Length: 263
Image (cartoon, rainbow, N blue to C red; front, side):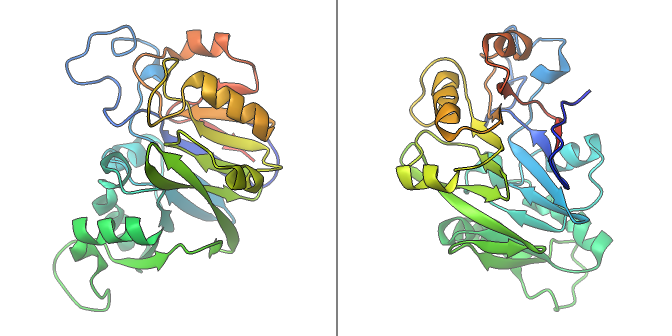
């Protein structure tokens, strides 16, 4: 059963917790890729934050449809993007189903650089939604992130991060923060994370990597931030779920696909 932390009226659902290649990886017969533990099966990284009857998707991975069907997600009200790498955006077409269910366009939040990439890849989805067409397509409204912004009545604070040399965003909503794909947290961003009680943080593997926190670096960052509970995501096939968690402190653990955190 999922581990739950009760702290209010939000829920965080991990739709995917794997790396850009997914796990099992194509053609790999390693211990994790052949593991019988369902927590070692990791789709690309994404999450759903639910509050006040609304569901906000963070990134749209290539497995979005499968993630939603698997975890019973029957509605998404908006999408917020961390950055425009393929493993975080290429499932965006699947949100067209939510347009049909809701009968309205959907807000898509991203910074200018990410929005440009989204509009290049999915130009047909950002057409004027009032234009009648027989094409089954997403109907999306671009919303630029230029500072703190409001989604369905709650304030989202963007947290600038570095993913190698790429500038990406994490997000803080109340006392929860989601920071995937990070190799460095600037000092100013540490200040934005002060007082966070539940933290999601990139923890790729135990070996160093140029564009992601290693598990050891993630633990050090988590200690500096001081969250009550930190969950690691964007995990490789070099990291077994059960054994790795036994090596970690109880307040820093690996997340897994389908984990639900009640906040």
